[in-house]
Amino acid sequence: MYKILLVDDERMILDGISVIIDWKSHQAELIGKAMNGLEALTLIEEKIPDIVITDITMPGLDGIGLVAKASEKYPRIKWVFLSGYNEFEYARQAMKFGVKHYLLKPCNEDQISEALTDIIKEKRDEEEAVRYLETIQQEASKLYEYEYEEIMKRFMTDVPLTEDLPQKFRHMVKKKFGTADYQFVIFHHEEQVEYPLLEKYMKEIETVFKDYPFIGTIIDSNLVILFDGEHFFKEQLIKQFSNMGNSWSMIISPHNYSSKRPEVMSSLNYLINQFFYNSEGEVVVQEKFTEFQTNIDQLTSIDLNQVIVHLKKQSIKQAMHLIRHFGKEMEYQKVSPKIAKGYFIQFYLLLMSKLNTVMLEDRFETISKLENMSYIDSYYQFFNQLFTSITEILPTSRKYSKVVMDLIECIEKEIHNPELSLQWLANNCLYMNPDYLGKIFKKEIGQRFSSYVTNARINKAVEIMEAEEDIKVFELAERLGFGSNPQYFSQLFKRIKGYTPSEVMKSAD
Image (cartoon, rainbow, N blue to C red):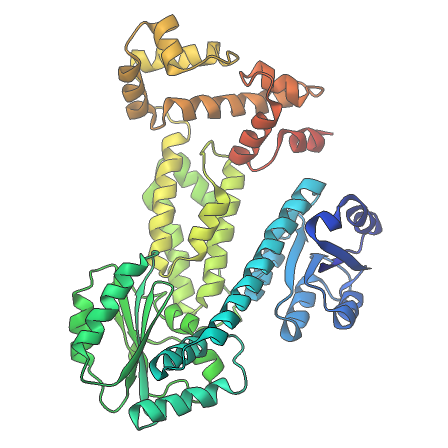
C-alpha cells in the first residue's frame, strides 16, 4: 500500500478530500493530515509517506518550503500540488524540485483520482525499474567485459551512487587501461532509436578501435564509450561521428572529470544536459561545458498575452521572437535544462488553457514529448509548429470559396444531426463528390472535415451552457448529435477543452 499524506490549511478541503477518495482502490492508505507545512514536515519524518498532496499557500511553512526541506532528506516522495489561479509563480518555483503534478482548486474526486493514478503508476514504474536492475545485477555474467559494462552503466545512471560503486569504477579503469586516466564519449540521439541500429553503430565503433582498450554500452538512445585517457583518439571519433548523420550529437568529457564529484558529473543526465544550449549535430567538448544554475532570481517570463496578440494577428514571427528571447535569457543565465524544460511546459499548458483552442491533441503525450527534448532548438521548433497550427484555427478575415462557405453553413444547420458526415452532406445538401468536398475543405480550412465538426459541436456546447444554466449533460449530447452517449461526449469535451462539461456547469453555480 502506498502511504498518502494530505496537507491544507482549510479544514473543509482537508476533510473533504480524505473522505471522497477511495484510497484502497488505488492500493493506497491515508496515513495522516496536516494543516500547515511544519506539521506536515513532522509527519513526513515520522511516517515517510510515498505521496504528499499539499496546498501551495499556507501560513508558516508553505508548500514550496515544505517540498524544499522534505526533498533534501526524502527525494523519493512524489508531490501533488493544489494550486489557485493566481499561484503560477509559486508553482513555477516548485518545478525546481521536480514537481510535475498540479491540481487547480477547486478540484473534484475524478481529478484527484486521476492524479493519484498517474503518480502511483510513476512509483510502480520506478520500482519496476529498480527491480529490473537488481535482477540484471544478480544474473550478470562473470565475464569481465560484461561486468565492466554493467559497472559503467550503473556509474552513469544510479542516483545516488552506492558507497562501493566509485571504488569499483576506479578499480575497473585501472585494471582495463593500466592507468587511472580516462575519458567518456557519448553519441546521443534525441529521438528513440531502434535497438538493432544502436547495435550496428556500436559494432562499427568496436571495429574501428578493435586494437585499443575501451568499454562501450548502450543506454536508451545513447552510445556510451569509456576510453583510456592517455591514448585518446579524437580525430577518429569525430570521423566516425560524421558518418552517423546530422541527427546525432557527440560529447567528449574532460580527463578524469568525475573523480572529484562522481555523483553529479559522471551521471549520464549531466552529460546529456550539456547538449541543451548547443545545436543538434554538434560535438561538445570541455570548452563548451556549462555550469548550470538552479537559483534564478531575475528571469523575465514569456508574456503570454503578447504571444496571443501576435497569434491573433497571424504574426508567428513576432510570437517566436518572444520565445527565442526567453530562451536566450535562460542561456545567458545558464538556467539548468530541467528548470528550462519546466518553464516551456508550463507556458504550453497556460497557452492551451488561455486560448481554449479547438485543437485536438493529447496534452499528456505532448508533455511527455517536451520532457524528453534534448535541445532548446527543439522547443523552438515545437512552438513554431504549434503557433502555425493555432493561427490556422483562430478566426481570421480570410475569404473562402462558395463551396466551402456552403459546407460551413450546412454544418451549422445540421450540427444536431447524429448522421452528419461529409458523405451525408454530399448526398443530401450539396449533391457533389464527397472526396472533392473533403479535399477542398481541408485545403481552405486547414482541418479535416470530421475534426471541424467535432470542434464546432464542442464550441456550440459551451455557448449553450453559457445561455442555459439548467442544461444537463445528456441533453447537450442529444442536441449536438452525440445521440444517447453522454459519456463519449464528456470525454471528447475534456480532451479538447481540458475540463468536463460538468465542471463548467459547477463553476457557473
